[in-house]
Image 1: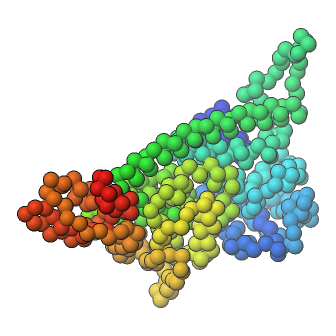
Image 2 (image 1 turned 180 degrees about the vertical axis):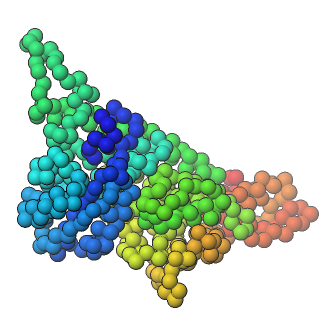
Length: 449
């Protein structure tokens, strides 16, 4: 199959390792529903603006858009038969070959709309588009496994005859029937059932492989915990500047681009604080409104890095007109994956793009500190480092003790895991005052180190 012939629902074909993506020649038409009973974070037009950015990221040229205002979602066609006919006419006039809905379509909506638009026009939704983008950008084996799992779980309830590309996997053609005769399997329900079994089998295998990755990651976290090295997780809306910030903080060369979901795979780097203490900074996948639930579930192993961190830096594009809504989207997603309460810093990024005199967002009790920065120019980054050090120090316990010379290993351990505030050498040893993690403080008090 040629690349430009690949349908969106075959974006991850088990017969191919390459993720197939839409080419710029694809012409897309966007559709949103403004349901009066709903309370979305973004207005329909603003959400369509974001959907257009997603489409461009996937290589689709957007040629038109439409919004349907309605009381409730139509049970048959999602936006109502009249609006569907109107969209059909515009799709023909604009020579569009893919219609993208801004919300996730239910399987029955998907099937009905595919019937109406016919085989010449693809019908996808925001979830399928995001899954496609993730498939393009996943670089590590872990990321590829997670995206593939999410795609299969999204696809399974939406199987139709035109989605049955797995026939060659299931060994189509003829086979020996149970009574010794020859049984022919056609393209109807029997094939759908075979495809479902194949997808179920693949989902089970992927979950097993991801669980192995998850266990490996857990062992690494346990090792870091034993070493007493604090971890700081960067979270934020997609394209908020997390990768640029981790580069500014650590001098790393993590790939950063002004586009949605430029990086998906987690990155961890060392950061040396002003007092000499070393911490680990972990970048995580960016969030977006209406993120597919299958994707959140698939990336749960990666997102555990956030749950196990000692503190969170929430990076927001302060220059974005929907910055407040983006903050709420990220916080809602963190709540969905059950991230526990922990110290959080709100980093108001991209100050270099703020109009002069426009103040950044301020005043939110969820955050221990709010720090305006520009990861691109470095403005405010030293202050952010100081705030990280302050917040970590406040989470530690203050200790005062005398360490004899023969226990220099204790002094080295305190330097490594804690923050040494003061030391006074004597002939017999060293008097110290320091802040250390609660676990180390308990061990020192019991002299079990």
